[in-house]
Image (cartoon, rainbow, N blue to C red; front, side):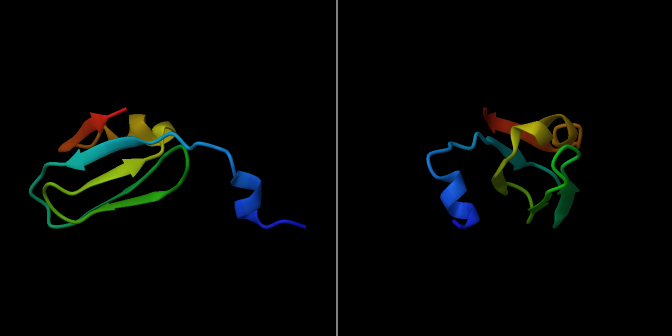
Length: 68
């Protein structure tokens, strides 16, 4: 029986790049669709998020979409 990584081979996971532009030192968000935790470590911190979480994450003040 193969492991989880073998099942995922050949699949491309789409992500959306977002950046936090706010005043909080740390900001922890939860993706409403996936339940994943996204943690930004201050102003200018950027990361890739699951596109299913985009509507939940972009409702937060200071979150800016960089690329889709």
